Length: 143
Image (cartoon, rainbow, N blue to C red; front, side, top):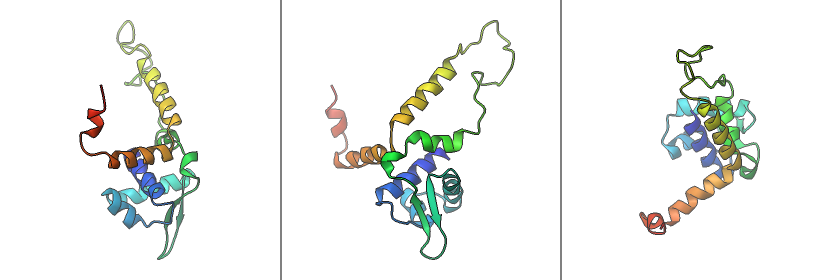
């Protein structure tokens, strides 16, 4: 769901935030219309997208792409999950010491920090820059 949300929001941002039908977005990102519609409605409920009904209806962003972070989009789908350091959601570990030792909490924190530092605009711009390079060109520039 998060991948569909990121792709859908990026598609709208990449099209100057004009009102775009679910059919066009789904076609543009090669996704199921039905599944994408559910994802977009969640984004509407979370205040990240706006929907208009009718023959000329569709979706727009509620804010400029520079004001929407990837964390906002991620949290629209992840915020209902209970946060725990134990992937088994146990109160008591069967081992003497937790095998993960807080690693999962640290990874989650780092992911949130990274996603919070990336805007939808930077996400779309990165994709646009990738189109300008020929295949393999990016690898050749690395040392």
